[in-house]
Amino acid sequence: MWVVVVGVIGIIVYSEMCGRVAAVAERPVFDLVRERVGFGAGLGTLVASQIVNLMTCAAEVGGVAICLQLLSGLPYRLLIPLATLALVVASWALPFEWIERVFGYLGLGLLVFAVAAIKLHPNWGRVAHGFVPGHHVGGSLPVYLYFVVGLLGAAMTPYEVYFYSSGAVEDGWGLKELGLNKVTSMIGYGLGGFLSFSLMIVAGTLFLPQNIDPQFLGTPPLAAAHALGQVGLLLALVGILFAVGGAAIETCFSGAYNTAQFFGWRWGKREQPAAAPRFTLAWLVIFALAFLVVMTGYDPVKLTEYSVIFSVVALPLTYLPILLVANDRSYMGSKVNGRLANVLGVIYFVIILAVAVAAIPLMLLTNGGQG
Amino acid sequence: MSKPVEVDIALGILDHQLVDSDGVNCGKVDDLEVQGLAGGSPEVTEIIVGGNAWRSRGLLGRLAARLAGNAVHVPWSEVESVSSVVQLKRPAAELRLGRGDVRWARLVGKAPGA
Image 1 (cartoon, each protein chain N blue to C red):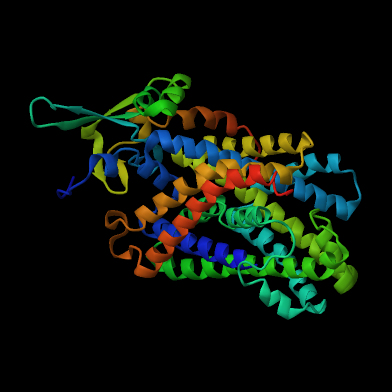
Image 2 (cartoon, chains in turn orange, blue):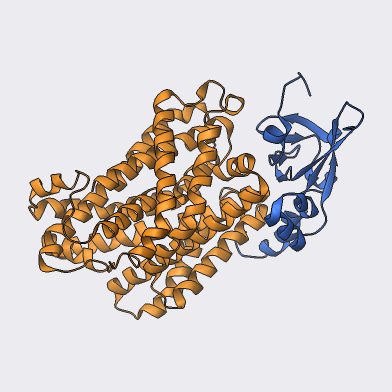
């Protein structure tokens, strides 16, 4: 659990930074990547981040289909095209704020896990132990490290800053929004971390003692049902459905934002689809590709784990330009990084580099966490 | 340009966003044409955008250039100002920029609600 704390602080640090750059200099993250690392390395970062985004998006489309299956009982393979279609229609028809609101608020159904975590009366002493690094039960050290690296990589996955900064530019953030930026990044990612704890406590209290490995998306909602009955189950499923669906739209749009920003096209969900046609086509193509990936029947969660390889390129080359530009007075004027942002920014950049270097050896060494 | 500012060409201009006089994104500064290097008073004469301009931008750039069309050359005299973006004096269409968006807009415009 300490890993989640480390990861969440990291993503808050860099989101605040790129939100500030978006508000002051009106430049989204992939503009910065291209400006600071150039065409060649920038294109490499674009390709790598697109693969990570696509795999993540595919896993999320699969997740939406699983949720719909649990809710409706219809066959999974029929629900994949339905889920994709629903996401495309929502992205096409709903304005930017509505996508954020609908998926954001309904995703709050996940809070049911926090209630479940308390009602299950976990051993809080053992929970507290989880916040101390190095306490692990069972499994070898490399496997433990593999999951540490995986969790850190997931908490700091680059699409979050792509979407966050592009959204800030779309919302026309200016100097007035700098306070909002701080609050949003802290509360938003803090809430994400809090929900992760809830899920981990639920899993640890209910499933671990009975040797159930909650690796299926359908398993955690049963915990909500166990603690809170039918309403709990329903809230949990709706929460997962909208949280995962919203994330699918975010990853898909991140891919389109990045491509358009790298090549200098018109972009933005606020534009009419035909006013930013290549951007519009980009996100439609990404949804189509994600659909095809899910239809192949490969386990999307496994695919996401393998896409970690590409994060090795995408992570450092995404976060370094943010750190550099946030310190550049020609962009930022007096709003450059303060000492706290810089100290944390540099520490986390070193952590990101360590994660990037360690990811592949650990994956090979542990056979993808199997030990 | 109103007042003289000091800009690092590689850091402050190359790879930056081009914005036309209507505030519309219309490509990136993919390469720059510099003349007078031998004479001792070098001067940026052209911005080169898209396609072939990527050839000089590393291995991936050469690959990308093979898949793309001809570059568009924009004389430096068309530049209004340089901030975090390069602002142009005229609409993109007059400078033959942003044509990809115009071309694809016909297709996307056919969809309902576009």
